[in-house]
Every structure is written in C-alpha cells, then in structure tokens.
Amino acid sequence: MAFILRDAEKIICAIIFFAMTLLGFANVVVRYASNYSLAASEELLTNGFLLLTIFGAAIAARTGDHLAVTLIYELLPRPIRKLMLIIASALSILLLAASAWFTLELLSNQVSSQVRSYALQIPAWYYSVGLPFAFALVIVRYTQRALDEWRELDRENGNV
Image (cartoon, rainbow, N blue to C red; front, top):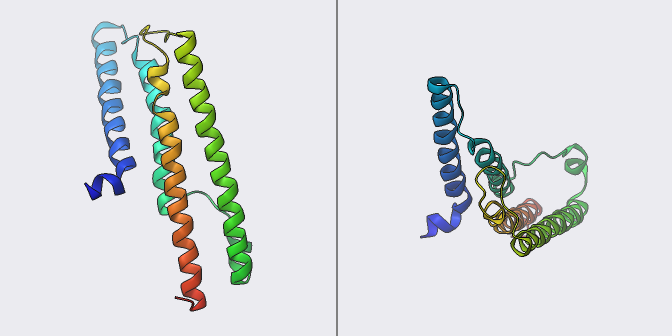
C-alpha cells in the first residue's frame, strides 16, 4: 500500500500511457486495413494526453525535475535561498490551487449543462473528472519537494 501512495502518479501515468498506446496502435491498424479510422480515438487520445501531462507534472514536482534557472539562486547566501524557496513554493502552490479550483468549476459547469463529447457523445465531464485530483496531487508532491529542499538547506548550514 505504501508503494501505491508513494508512487500513485507513476502508476496512473503508466496505465494511461499503456491505454493510449493500445488505442493509437489499434487506430493505425484499422486505418491501414480499412482506410477508415476509429472516430473516437482522437478525442480519447487528446484527453489522455491532458491527464498524462498533469500527472507527469506531479512526478516531476516530486523529483525536482521541473525546469528551473538556478544560477543566481545557487550564488545567494542560504538565508536568502530559504526566502526564495518559500516565495517560489507559495506562488507555485497558489497557481496549482487556482488550476484545481478552475477545473472544479469546469467540472461543475459540464455536469450542470450536460455537455456531451463530440465523437462518443458521452458526458464531457468524464474527461475532466480527474483534473482536480491531478492538480491536488501536484500540490502534494510540490510541497514534499519544497520540504526536502528546505531540509537540504538546513543540512548544508549544519542545523540538523
């Protein structure tokens, strides 16, 4: 169970990526064999890419692999680095919380207006239901990484 909680986003990304690979491959085979494509494949793959991107961002947030320019940061004294870490983390978490909030609003609007997807004619909120959870997971992983960096700055300073 600890593995699932620790690596939830990796498991989710693997499942989504596997399903997208199968669907894309099936679409190519059908198109090659019959000159027709699976009508819903584009819709499913596009929404799969969206989920894969956000859950992938959670992986990058946890491992600290997001793009960052650290030249100036590394030249600063540790107390200023801690301040910059607090500011950057707070702004990032604020942006992610706003994204989670707006995807909840999107979900609410899609449910109340009963919007349907173009190709499959299923409720559009089916595609959006995972987005708020994905953004919340990015917040959790980003917070974990910020705490790890804070502890690392303390260790460098000899405060452990």
